[in-house]
Amino acid sequence: MFESLLIIGVLALGCGLWLDWLIAWLRRRREAEAACPSPGIYIAAELKARDWTRADLARLMGCSVRTVSDIINGERDITLETAIGLAAAFGTSAELWVNLQVSHDRRRCRVVAS
Image (cartoon, rainbow, N blue to C red; front, side, top):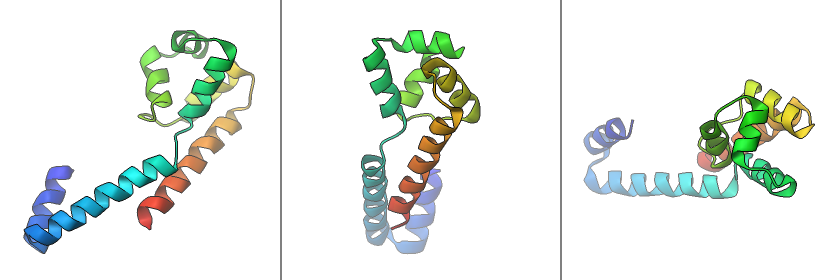
């Protein structure tokens, strides 16, 4: 994707304008991530409060530790299946986790679009 953007940018805008656009785009992406922390922060807080490890949560959810780590680090979204596993592990509703993900996605879109 990045290579395609680079080729299009160089052809359409010229090097100087393209570089300005790219820097602004990267800055918006970074700001979006900072302004919209992933739902993983809530999972990390729950793990700490319960004195659980990521492996403990993965076992309870029936998924890999890698999946749990990716969600906590904001590298993977909470899917419906994951939300059901989180709800079962933490004694919450799946809707809570889905809503946290949707709220995160909406905030991230607003920041990137602005």
